[in-house]
Image (cartoon, rainbow, N blue to C red):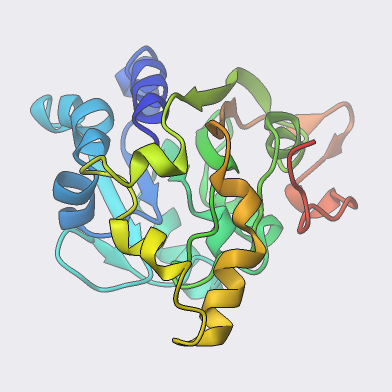
Length: 242
């Protein structure tokens, strides 16, 4: 997550009434170590205030690790039922959709576990290098493309975040990409398929890093019909910045 992205998300999250936002589900949370040590700006700008006020934040991830409160696959109906019973009022999902095969299905699952008027806080890289965790589908949607995944939601806020750090600058920054990533470019004979995946999408490593951020509120009906993300017909699986 970009530092500027965490600041924007945190400001808007804590600008909403706490009683309408919490308990909050942090979907695709990764580990406590990741949130507090590898990318401490996530804790500092997004979750610290909630923890200090004893507001309920439940960290959810596929991996069962320290700092993960609930472990499971959001696409499994049984796990969705477990999440529904938590009575979440909002779902926070950041930098997760590019790591799943079917982002539309994940968005539909988010829709399903929230009550009417629930909040969806979502961000995704818009211009950012290839990064596996464990895969990267290169899903790089614009703000409008993210919003279209939830067609009957009310848009509370949206923004394309820009970071002054490029990939090359980030390699010298303690929260950025390690120097080994640069060195890897000159070692095509070590794991050549992995090297090819890295070099194939190298254009994302040049220019300013950007992220698409949206905050939505679930609206149960649009006109006279109920709409969910499954009504989307446009395939965004190859979406990329213009």
